[in-house]
View 1 (cartoon, rainbow, N blue to C red):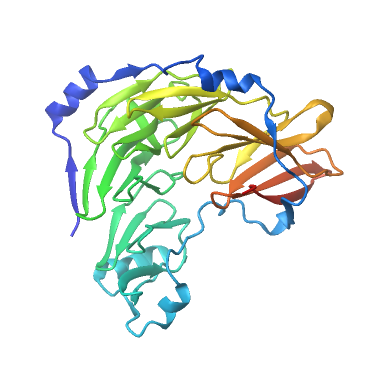
View 2: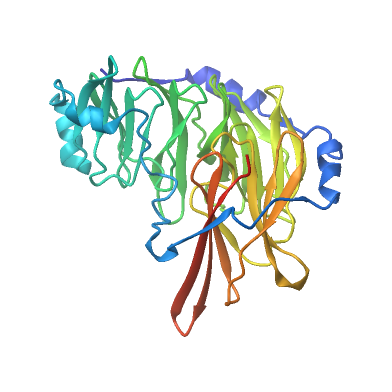
Length: 375
């Protein structure tokens, strides 16, 4: 069932030697950037924050919960519900304790798999493909059966699908204490065919997300030199473009929005015209470390979230529209402690979680709220 391809060696050599172009962000002082100098418009706070029990929130799993796009009760009650028993599905069950099933829901054959021992899972919006990641193994399940896509993918790898959900991108290779060798692969989920997009002995690549249907954003690290980092756009032909960006220690990518972190400032960019990164603006100094369980960008990339401190120590939730640079902010609820860090997680396009934490005498104290965006 599974076929794997490597781009021809001659083509790869030509790509490495001749086609690594530099993309300079357009309009670095454009209208989106200028809008950041204005005070953000106020968002309502009272009635929009809801306390949640931060102690019970599994932030390590948040952002990776399996979203079922169909009626799960209807699936469980379907008369044709059955376990997949092809050899690879059984091997997956043994390897990462995920049992795959199929059933007909609303006239469509869909797939299901329990969490088992998987670290992360993702399902396509039509319910026909399930992707499960163990510690290092990557498995794909369809209504016809399963296959092991990679036996050693990046340990921190997220399950990254193209915007149309037809392709899966990931980094696979080896990891050693003194060297990294992750290369970029892309699997066509319909044909089960995999193409290796990079084969570069000098660099290791970590897949961050799709900029569009044909372009993958990657963090490129010079092997044996962890300081040699750069952001690179890799297209489906294996062509690489070096992205000249501010704050490129790492990045979050969602729906064509790119948040670059590190360096002298944290900067938000927007992928435009399928070949240009437009600078939207820099994020304000937070005043405390800000982490996110999934990404600071909303599921579609239409908003970026940040927590920052204003005069007097009040914390605010900042939202930025990458398309326009428009900024809005809402004051966080008061907390009797002085927070040392904040965490952000988008539950969906209109709801996010914010958790503050403080450690004293070896005891960690937390407070968490959900914020629902005004209609």
